[in-house]
Amino acid sequence: MKLSEIKSKLNKLETIAFQLPNGELVPSHFHVTEIGKITKNFIDCGGIVRYEEVVNLQLWNENDYDHRLQPEKLLNIIELSEKTLNIGDLEIEVEYQADTIGKFGLDFDGKNFLLTNKQTDCLAKDKCGIPAEKSKLVLSELNNASTCTPGGGCC
Image (cartoon, rainbow, N blue to C red; front, side):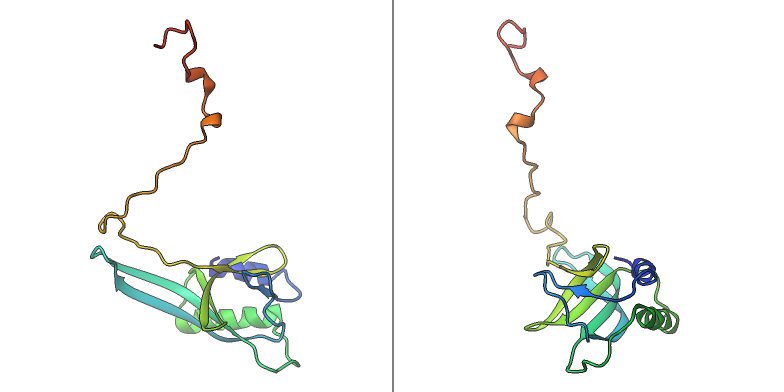
């Protein structure tokens, strides 16, 4: 999800809820402790220099049950961070404390913001000998018109 998308969704919500990949909700008394622009310059295992930028939202909860972040307040925090940090319409990455700091993608199901699992991946599979994944065919779904039949002249 891009920053413009979360802003659009926040404008239509009365409350904010974040749902973890296992279906549990982040406690409703969470705080957004950071919004930042993270820049990553790196080289992959194939020797290609790469550059990525994301907006990072850090969620945190403590025993502060008296405060609930409202959509309008989060929208104000996002807009301040955009202006102050010169953040463009970047993809959002969410940090949330589990056994260690978890990094998640962000989606929306019409009610809750969904923290989605992120996976590592090799960006240079062609350089390190990882074969491209072959497409799988279901034989029963192949077009039967191309099959040979007795007397069909295809053999």
